[in-house]
Image: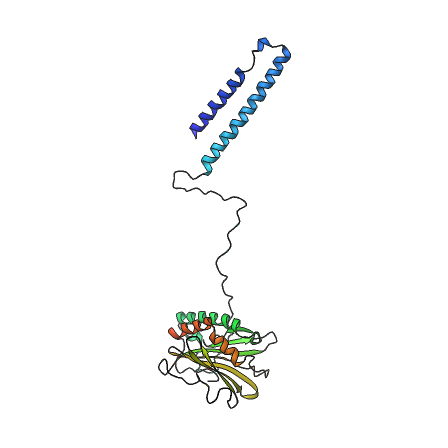
Length: 287
């Protein structure tokens, strides 16, 4: 920086001396010319000084703003018109506030009784499942939220106040993987079932599934469920009616089969099958 200042001062001095040397001597001029010469010299000096100042400022600014030899610790600011790069991270999934239901008896287990780490794991699974089920099930089921009583239990609620219990159970099976298990195939002829109907389907990987539409207590209300075997587990997805409102489950057997075929749904099932969260003796409603 000191060298730059010395060089600039020398440059100013040389240019000024050169400009003065080109002007005629004062004693050869009449008084008017003397005045004119002084004005010319003043303008020349101002122009030279301004040009040198600009050059000097550029040198000084460059020496300050560019990274030096200290490892590039200084920051070079981007141009003002640089367009910000778009966000690449995905928005987090919305949190679904769980529905709180108290156990109906002293023998009924609750997620609140689980060890903290296991409870946290099951709650995280419920959040993922609730968001996905809300996307895959018909809108008529309403907003799907987890129920804090059991990991397999969820609830759909519509703007009209209708409430539908939703069950997603991935339960360790009592039989060996690959064997035909109860409920995975329609009994008798598909489509004909006393008190309802059954529809046979095939999931990715050749997995056999059976979807049922059955009467639930009252002949006026029906529930829908799909069952299949996956790995070491028996899987059931079911939607039950709102008994108080006398409204059947607003989903068909075919629609539940479509949910079961979705790769994202099967990914959830795979996670629960690999690290079970239910016991063999736990059964879901309608089982």
